[in-house]
Length: 209
Picture 1 (cartoon, helix red, strand yellow):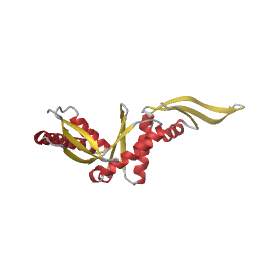
Picture 2 (cartoon, one colour):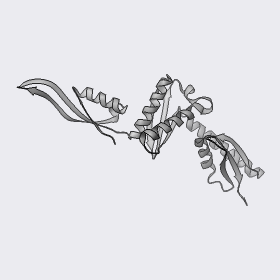
Picture 3 (tube, helix red, strand yellow):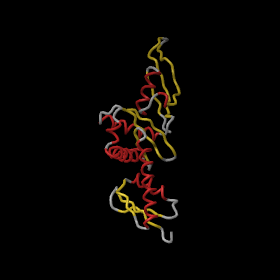
Picture 4 (tube, helix red, strand yellow):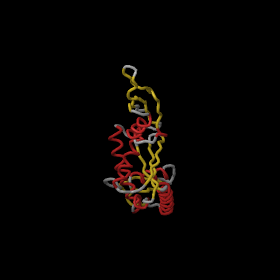
């Protein structure tokens, strides 16, 4: 965890500077006062000197991800609040606010674009590979349920006809959900096909099934 030492006239000023440095609130930092005294010359009290040590309670990658998304949303002039958490090697950013519809966009395209930009920026700033998922008003969860439903219905169709079925081009995130949904199905297998970011998904009957 990154730690900084800050010197200021008052404890409040030092904490405020630490919050700005980490783009965090005071509650998200561990604050330790390491020096708090007044300087004096010939017995005359002079200026007060305060030094603190500040360390984020949250993983620095999470702070970087949230800070980048906040700056993007500020440019979009969207009034919103971002909550962030990290599970394993994935950061989840959830946007709450009145502009959720604008942020999600048609079929989630704007949300996907935001996620793509944040991922690129975070990996460059953090210095190593880490996955960031951007969501708004639980859109991702609802979409995941819809994609799983699509996967299961397509699988049933393939089992009945014995023919390959094609699912329209999907983003890497959407494809992963469909692939995982049918991974354990003993009668079908899935395969991505195409060039670029968005690819079709083939649902193929397994031989002998």
